[in-house]
Image (tube, rainbow, N blue to C red; front, side):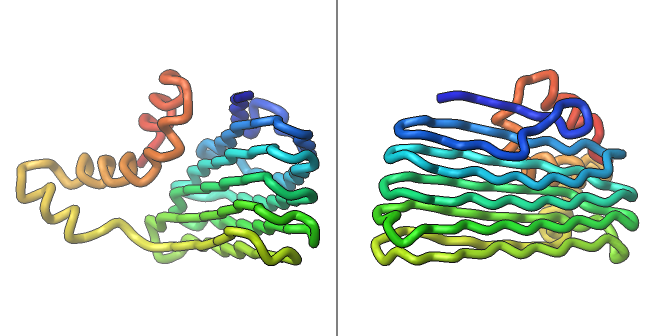
Length: 198
């Protein structure tokens, strides 16, 4: 599998990607604090057996604007795509996630999944999440979902009752929340993300 990692603001992420028959790509996008980002990404699964594993992570703990638009088109049958985007948003930051999975009429046996989950650190942070499916084939397995919420106070209480200081407990909760994406990254980048958590 072709593994690609892009730190937005440092690396130039692709705007369009085409996967032909049998191509398998794993792509991870990272947006670090202090980076205002606008990214529109289109991915075409154009050949049978093509497979996409796409993940993203955004950190906006204080301010900033992140606008992510992802379009994945399943043009032929027998392809699969998975998307997982996770982020932490605080202060007065704004994040907008627009995701669309398009399944063409002849794209039978498609498997396509999309998730976007955000953690809010303040009452003034805002997240708009719009995962969407547009399906014209009937023999498919597709789903999408989104959640936005706050740190779990019960988990925080449990850790504090075990002697973990509040700041460290919050930090551990954030690490656990981001773990499914962070584990895809090289150690140096993972450490940089851990160090930048508030």
